[in-house]
Length: 337
Image 1 (spheres, rainbow, N blue to C red):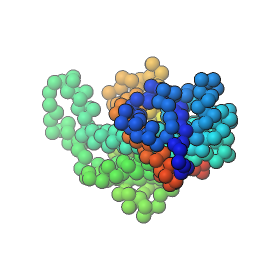
Image 2: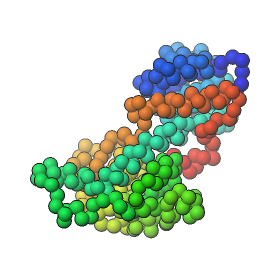
Image 3: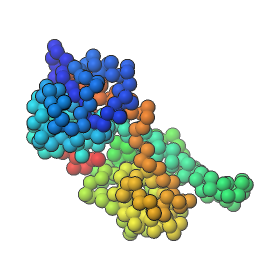
């Protein structure tokens, strides 16, 4: 959208996120690129106070808390030509009306993939050292473990199974390269040659589950992946295996997983669950073989600035007449998060 005038832009998200997404230097850079009011953050497209700005808006800068962009929202923004999402998935944000209008959509999902991959890498290495179990033992006994208790501990040759060569999955594969791990990959869209180029051996889902010490989920939440790890597939994971889920809780049958965890046969690192959060009475909160975190793997705190920076860079490209670098296409949503 090259122009002699700055494009009119409007923020649409929960305003609590704005200061972290766009700290002062980045906000100033954004205001040099677009005509935008930092004091106006839309949460309701029917709000009369936002009507004037939306009527002129050519760009929406969206984030967590943005309402669904339905036909009513588009009617309020007749000049809208681009949606730049300062977060990850746009699945719940966009719909048929937006695609039919021909609005370009871009997402900072690549920026959000890095902290998730970093969290996952950290957990893989800690799990390989049996850090969580040793912590529990040390709390109880106040004594150091003997050789018999650490014989199966260590990351040398540990078999890590990655399910899904998504943006997060690929970033994780990149981060795993320097370590002496054996990396396996299951993704129906990735050939064995491409998997090898990513540093992994391509296996069927069943073979990966049966051969991995640690299984890490990075598949999208789509109908085909709902409960992809059901009771039968969880049973394929070897005794003592560990499941890491930083993707979506719905990829796992949580009743079946809870049974495996309560029995002690498997362990888990769960940053996402189904439902989310778990009911107050769930046994997973207190099991020593479960490391449960409240959906923190994605961008938090100062990591949000990375997402804002991606949006500003994307807007600068659009203003210069260049295509978006992180465009989301309608066809993509059939197989990505």
